[in-house]
Length: 513
Ligand code: GAP
Image (cartoon, rainbow, N blue to C red):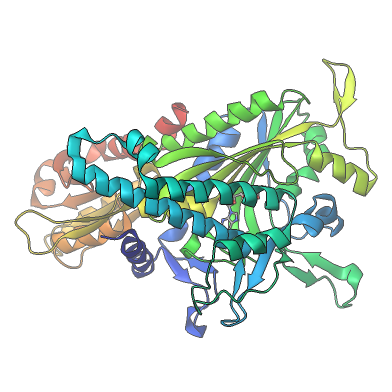
């Protein structure tokens, strides 16, 4: 099945089973804004807990905060967002549709790469085991031509972005003969810069001074609280501050479901270090973070690093952790060495001294910062897109759709089923559920056949279903049915809590980080 079709199915599945709904759907929705449903919110909370515990519980020198979304407007001047948080936009004069110029060029490059891959795949099929991909890429003329186009465009593109050369961005689009996907025309406007921050008015007077922004990143709430936390928490460098919260960006190319939204959630940690030691910590956190991802067991090959060629205005090194989504490898998390840019600028703009006295070095300095910043919604998307599995079942007409969500993150950990609605089985099932519900998110179901109930739980990713049958009344045992293998085992009721704890608790995964 084409990746695009799989992605559509995942989106439909997320809606059908209460993971994610379009925001304000009864009014035809709001573009690039989504609501998490009754199952989605559980998964989201579990991801947050996995991240929060890994940061704050496993590291004595990392503490958390929860800063406000609204901040003093000077914050965003100091951070550089008022001046530099822009996307280069271009309009097609015929369709009147607006695009990000950089995205149009990136898509063009991806198309060329796709063409090369097609040639390689075709040749691999033709030559079989004897195929030498390296040699093919070095000698096939069509591949060489496309590779040359990619290299030339890429190097012009990086330079144009670095120099904010909007005229050259337009020229690249024209030279590559990129057409508007809607009108098919090459009738483009000039490229203009567009600030991504949402603004609103504070109070009732609508003048310049009362314009405030919805934060485009949570990080600034940490920077402005650096001294508060350092002093009240008696923190010694190196130390970190972690935060989970909403961020807002007026994204122009907002698409691919929850991958790029206008309202989204970030989990960020700023790690404050001695100037000069930032590269060591940058590499430390790169490794630590990819390990956190891989520990979920979704497959190491699903992740890769992408080192940035063009650095953000505040960074001296930056890399993304990319995940292989249905639409290809894309950024799920960024690790940035932000230097002393933010604290230094807040010192300048606020007029307050924001420094740290290092008792070991016996001197004051502005700490450097290494940041880890992960999009909660992108993490969510990586999990549901990886989990979505269609299976045919031997000897059955119907297959099943099963969400193979890592058990520690599963929205519902176990479902409790009485085999029938009579003979006291529901009462026994309720008793078992009443014992387990304090430790695990459980669902009770007695309607429909056991098979149907299994399917419903498979669809929301419940890793274990417990069935109470007539034998339970005789020997106090139940069956546990495993989601992924569909195997069943019989276990004593008295052992259920311990068995579940072993299988779904985060403890074991956290211990291995
Ligand atoms: N404080 C640094 C920062 O905000 P970023 O690379 O712009 O850096 C960090 O964003 C992470 O936030 C990204 O890796 C991505 O997972 C997530 N993110 C950014 N923009 C997003 C959007 N429009 N929708 C969903 N997630 C987004």
